[in-house]
Structures are given as structure tokens and as C-alpha cells.
Amino acid sequence: MNGYALAGTALGALAVAALAVLLLSPDQGPPVPDPVAAARVIADRFTPAELNRADDYRSWARLIGVASLLVQFGTLGFLAFWRGAPMRRLLARLDRRPLLGAMAAGAGISILLALTGLPFDLAAWQLGRDYGLISQDLAPRLLDWLLGILITMIPAAIGALLAMALWRQLKGKFWLLASVLVAVWAVVTTWLWPVVVSPLFNDFDPLPDGPARQEVLRLADRAGVEVGQVYEVDASRRSSTVNAYVNGIGSSKRVVIYDNAIRDLTPSEFKALVGHELGHVKANDLKRGITFALLVIPLGVLFVQFASGAILRRNEDDPRGPALIPVLALTMTLAVFVLQVPGNALSRQVEAKADRYSIHLTGDSQGLVDLQVGLAKANLSDVDPPAVWQFLFGTHPTTFDRIAIAEGARRTQ
Ligand SMILES: [Zn+2]
Image (cartoon, rainbow, N blue to C red; front, side, top):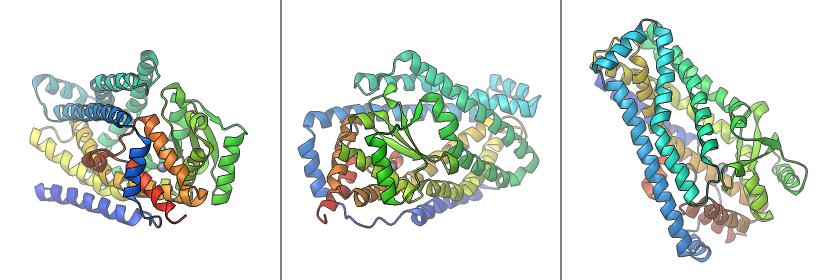
């Protein structure tokens, strides 16, 4: 293995990801976006003060996000590369029981990342409170953070144990079995997350019979989709944001609607929101997401293997020793970060399609415009965020682009 193999694998993984985006992106179909009308809507419906306030909030939030990311990578880079005497002693101690040592290293790294991330977590919380977006008090926020540590620590410890066992047994073939395990993990978490993890943070109640439930069932019937369960989640316990989502697969499939949405949206906005979620169900978008993951995982894991091997050699670490775990943590985080960029490009396409489907289903493009305006105001969204930010992190089209799609439909309605 040399530098060429590493670079080739990195480029190969990116090429597969780009190809997967092309293959899995849904055909958009009509309407053609109307950016001129969107600019008019934004000028009419938002005051300059509102736009400035959202811009202030989002600028601070982005700054906190970038700082947090840099500190996270800095921490992982330090653990992967620093080989001062205390680190050597620690690695030697972990090496006495390699598998247990790997578990401890995995758990320890996830705790350390949570600790170094805490100031940014609190800064984001304070910012949200200052702007009236977050209602949660400090104590429950810290409890959420502790719960978050527990939830990441357990898979981190088990993952580190498995990685160490495979690395020692399989050597150059590590990536083959590791890919399978990562893929299984991706599918199992999609399936179990809504039934195991989400309920730890919020209460989910089946949406009681009433106008909201009737509307969901009526639209689902018109769309010809099986929605699974319809839940209301008590999102208002943390924040005033308005949203809905679909998740789960098979028996855990569900539509989840924020209580804020049920309380605050007008009937036509609510229909637009539900229509969008039904668009995801209709187009099987969760399977699309999982397929993307399954396509990029093998070369992504091979890159992780090559990069980790290169760092271990550079450090002159024992190639079978516990230094593997911090090195893997760094290379995996890097791979996930980079592959998420094409993943987000796919997500934006999928979201644009769900908006188009919503207009098609409800026949009411004004409802979708009103919904986007309302969501942007309630969530203090940047209607037109910096292009670089949107490219790297945007999972949805911008508010501007979403209004442009809905406005485009008006011309044909
Ligand atoms: Zn969506």
C-alpha cells in the first residue's frame, strides 16, 4: 500500500458517491422554479428587520457550528497523532487487554468529544434562548447531553471492540467485513432509531382522532400510500420549531408531526406539510437514503483502512495495538464528513421532489408558499444562506428555492 492507493481510493469513493447521487436523484418534473416570483414573495412577506434578525441568528449559529466541528477534528487529530509520553503510557496500558482496551478507548473518545463539544452545545442553547427559539431550561438540556453521551458511548465501545478484533484477524481484508457491519448498522439504526432512541428524548403519541388525523388519512388515501402510524411528538417541550418527518422501515415506519405544527399551522399549510411527508413515503425516500449509504460504504471503509494504516505507520505505532482506535475515529469522521456532502446533494433533490409532490397532491401551491414563509419565520431560517454553507451542509433546498418551486406551479395552476 502506498500513497497512490490511498489517493485512488479517496477519489474512487467520491466518484461512487457522485454516481450514486446521479442514479438515485428523483426526476423533478414540473413545476419549473420561478426565482423572480420567489424574490417578490420574500420582499412582500418578510420585513427587513425579520430578515436581519434571522441572518444574525444563523450567522452566530454557523460560527458555533464551524467552531465545534474544528474542535472535534482537532481533538481527534490530537489523539490520532500525538505520541507524547503520557499517551504512550496510556496506549501501553490499554494494550495489556487489547479487546477490552479497545472498548475503553472507544468509550473514552466518545466521552472526550462530548466534553470538548459541551461549550458549543451550551453556546447554541444560549443563542436559541436569546432568540426565543429554545424554551428548554439548562438542567433538562444537560440531562439531554448526558443521555446523548450514554447513547453514543455504547455503540462506540462495541464498534471499537469489533474493529479491533477484525483488524487483528483480517489485516488487509478488514474493510470487507467492516463494510458489512457498517451497512448492517446503517439499516438497523434506521429501523430501530424511531422505536428505541427517539422515545428517550420525547413523548410520541398516536395522533388522536380529530381534524388533523382525518386530514393525514384523507391525503394518504388520495396519494395511495400506506403511512404506517401517525404520531404527534411533544417538540414544544424544547423549542418552538415547526416540522414533521417520516422515518423507520417496515414495522417501525411512521409519520411524525410536531405538536407545534398541529397547533400553529393553518389548514392549507398543514396540508402542504403532510403532502410533503407523503411525497417521501410515496417515493420510498428512506430506501433511497439507505441505498446511497450501501453504495458508498465499501470504498469509504477501504479509504478508512488505508488512511488508518498510513497514520499508524507514520506514528510508528504497533499496527496491532490500541492506537488503532483513535486513528480509526479520525479517519472515519473524516470519511463521513466528506461523503455527507454528496449525501446532502441527494437529500436536497429528494426534498425538492417531495415539495413538488405536495403541490401535485393538494393542488394548492399557495399553501406551500405560506408554509415555507411560516417555517422560515418560526425557525429563524436564513432564506438564502451562503452558497458554500448550503453546498456542504444543506439537507433541504433553501427557503428561497422552495418558494421558487411553489411559485413556479402558480403559472400552470
Ligand atoms: Zn422532507
